Length: 342
Image (cartoon, rainbow, N blue to C red; front, side):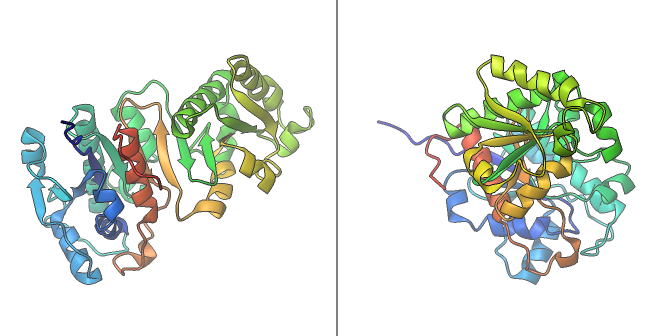
């Protein structure tokens, strides 16, 4: 007799309470394809979710457990539920407003979800949107999720990858100023991002992927005419190392032609040198469906590819498609064998 496999428990961090995180979490839990393949648990505040549910007329999960009890005993129920931190008790909360208290609460959800994944209480983590200004107001100095996960998991190497059916981009550098990018490039760093990207795309595609690496400078440096020779010093040697290991890879290509339609359709993933070089084409082509992954972690982490959208928070206008895709991929990567085709 073949018994059904247990559904993987996916921790979904609620994100900043003042943003759209609470409502997209509630909306995602209404997805039949989601609850069919995993047990989603919102790591957040039950009182905030109840307020949002009342305002937006979204269903509220009935199952609820306090964080302290979950930390001791795990999830005492099946199906969608809430791990309640009660982090916003007695705290001012105005939807759409940046506040230190919401940044502090968002960070608490994240660090607790990471701890739960490291200890095996959840199979993966899917993160809702956070507000960097609120984090900093709370004294949390990380520039983003990627850096939080890398530090708290003590991962020796990580990279940020955003992926959708149409386009995937990995980033060599992430949340830094443009003038700092060149100084952060090295053969070793570019090669490890290529390697992590190739390994992940092979897992997702089930075959050897085709990659493109972008240059840093206009015209990919034009043979040293532009920039400080970053293509010749760092990017080309990293590509050659990867090619020697059998990676199907092209580049460095100029950023202004790398994303032409015929190249996008023939490419499984791009390795880009800096944040906007990859995210501008990705969000133009797949803003609603793209999701974020952190590669190289000892745990599975996926995320929405958008921000807190404070201007429409708690108005019932936000859509949960990116979060749903993130949760579904987290379930797939956690090893659930009956994951349905998208």
